[in-house]
Image (tube, rainbow over all chains, first blue to last red; front, side, top):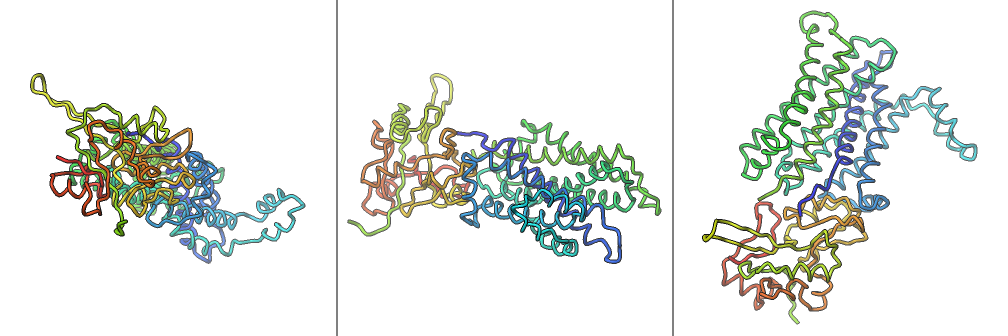
Amino acid sequence: MKTIEWGLLIVNYLFLGGLSAGLFFVSALATYLRNREDTKDSRIARLGALMAPWPVMLGCLLLVFDLGHWYRAYKLYLHFRWMSPMSIGSWLLVAFTLVSLLYCFAWLEEPQRNQLFAFVPTRLNFLHTFNSDLSRYRRQLAAIGFPISIGVGIYTGVLLGAVQSRPFWNTNLVAQLFLFSALSTGSAALIIALLWGRKTIEFEEIRLLYTLDICFLTLEFFVVLPYIIHGKLSVQAVQDSLKLILGGPFTLVFWVFFLGLGLLVPLAIETWEVLPTLWSKASVHFNKVWAATAALLVLMGGFLLRYIFVYAGQMSAFK
Amino acid sequence: MSTHSKRYALVIDSKKCIDCKACVVACRAENGVPLTKSRNWINEEHRGTWPKLLAAFEPEQCHHCADPACVRVCPTGASYQRADGVVVIDDVQCIGCRYCVIACPYDARFFREDRGVVEKCDLCARRIDRGDMPACVETCPSKVRVFGDLNDPDGKLTELLEKREYRVKKPEAGTGPQIYYLI
């Protein structure tokens, strides 16, 4: 009996998990790229660190409520099954959430920390010993979290790709696709966060985010292409499954809304924005409306990618 | 008592199937399967125009694969394979993530919303453990299904598979299905 088992809860979780991975990755990168002599903190690193833990935690909540028995979720942690991507992923998620929370804490200013600890009831006063400045460990935490964030970003694709019975999923390109899309949504979310803030955005900040996003989107594009080409050159079942996006029910959403509006259009906008830096030392164009449009489109594309893959994959099968 | 390890499997002679669905009903009664779901089913194929017609019926259920994808993807080990090859689900360990439902190339599994767990054919494990036949096998009026031990050199399965041509479904999925369809 063919049914769609994984629906919008899972789509949202895959998106949110990827978003967190991307936020952490970009933040960690910004932490590294900062010179030790710089006295000013990188705003991208700070914003990324402060934002990273929350989407994945919300996503995990969705994941738990998707289970037949939400209260049995703990059983995932009574076992480790290395052949099951879901088992590996559930452990990765815990590691990532812990590291990203710690990293987030390390980026809090002292008044913010004090505000946070003001919530601690007097009976639990011993908790105040944890109110310490971890800012000197930011680089180390970023280093630990680096591979874990990549792991979380890529695992969401492996979760689908490692299912041999669904030809639409069964290629490791899905893992790369989800990873690059995750990193790209992370940098797009940071562009929005920068625009949201009242402070003026510095040239170097926006250039870094644009450059990263252009890299990630280009990588993603050059995974989408081989995904389709290899699929068309693969066995019959894979060729048939590709019909879902080549004339089938997901054609419009894949080509127009994901690949067009969600990938190529923001790529074009961002490329146009940084174009002046190629010819001279001139600043980026930096039109706020274009920047926000590109970032929102990237987020939409990231969401739609997961939507298409989750649903189309479950509809594909060996005949 | 033989000492060899058992490997239970089914041989299905589809040509004998008359689509009476007694197997589906028997399974439902034996295993308490709700009316909206089914642990076994009959594929139908209709071809041609009168008078050149074909109506073919082919019963199907969990293939109790040699290398089951459902068992591999299960994050808690709730889906597991017994030493005799039967793939079963431990209700208590199942968290209802439905990864196995998606991973099964035969769509032989379903999610029971009322119980929050995944179910499928277990070859009537309770019955075969006490020496009975699975309910679908016992009830079939035209003797389509043959249940037995593949490792028994004198068994019915060995004899049928030595004498008759057979096929398995979707071998390209790579899970090593263990329902043998006689041709």
